[in-house]
Amino acid sequence: MKINKLALLALLLGSSASQAQNPLDFGSDIKTADPSGHVWQDGKMYLYTSHDEECQEDFWMKNWHVFSSEDLVNWKDHGAVLSVDDLSWADNYAWAPDAAYKNGKYYLVFPAGTGHKDRVNPEKSTKWMGIGIAESDTPTGPFKDVIDGPLWRTPYANDPSMLVDDDGKAYLYFHGTNFDYYVVEMAEDMRSIKGDFQKMDMGGYEPKMEGPWIFKRGGKYYFTMPENNRSLAYYMSDSPKGPWAYKGIFMDEEHNANNHHSIVEYKGQWILFYHRWLESDPSSCHKRQRHSAAEYLHFDDDGTIRKVERSEQGVADFVARVKAASTHKD
Image (cartoon, rainbow, N blue to C red; front, side, top):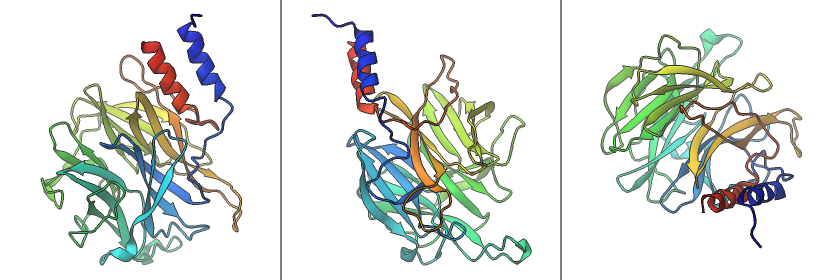
């Protein structure tokens, strides 16, 4: 009996439509944020995340975790692969990381810092943050801070995003105090920066931002970010250094809270990883805390990104969707 391919597609997708997968299930009550997705040579999806301690004080965070999956539903927690206890130059603020592969090594690029942020009397704040880079022979670490210091001390910086382009050049983007929308090229050995910071042309629109994520698709570069630290927005360019053209918001804010994301293609599907602020049990503080989540991302024919809505299902039907897409191609 012949089965209509479109009917099969609907059947496969519908069979798992009732499953809930947001937030992502990492097999424990761990609170994670700032998920950075990467697909390495072994074909698995890896998520590099910051780790929110239960009811933590003012984003005082101590380590970074790595999770891996082959179906985006069943995840393995590889544990804390780097901690501020491993650093000589920082003791707090283990915030949003990113990762890269180059020279046969895996790199964890991360922010960390010292001091205290006085939110009542900002002039008394002693908080400082810089960006470090650690190396490993495997994607799951452990990672080692081989340069024993930040890549630079001025400007104050966090939220790094690394793009290794097709020609092997590595570009580092970040959020910095009075230093947003800058890029710097990494040295070939990935242990220092090459040359000076370059201010990019953003087409005249430079809202407050944090957490940039840069990726390439179909010859186009995408500079995405939480605009005003809340809604996810993006620019497009023909070059990793711009000039960039602003295209708008593709995910609205939620609960007037920050968001931080990554965008990566996996098995023919484009995935948006991000975090949500949700109440969960068990919890001793009964407040919204951060949890990593995922949605499908879709593009129009001109390369622009379609609006993304948060869902309870997320990517729970990923396996069925990949199978259906393969069947449809046949």
